[in-house]
Length: 95
Image 1 (cartoon, rainbow, N blue to C red):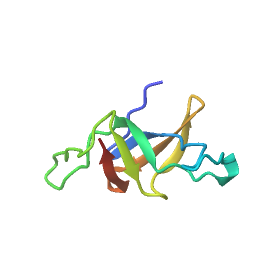
Image 2: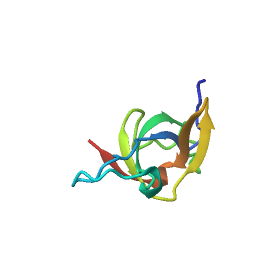
Image 3: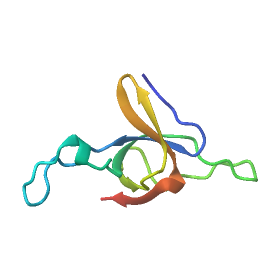
Image 4: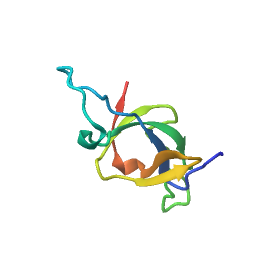
């Protein structure tokens, strides 16, 4: 299925957190925090400005990003979990 976010929205796939700590302790699923890192799957066509033009995104499809903990809306598409969020919820790009 092909999904195109509207306006300034981004479709992000979470990158799963490690199942072990740095010391080698295996964490159960209930102890893991939801990862705040993901990969941009699709971008909308940009925020509509007052002059009628669309603002360009600072991020692009395929980049790894860090986002705020409570940002975005969780959605399921073809059995996969994604986040739909605004570019404002993106904190950094991971290079």
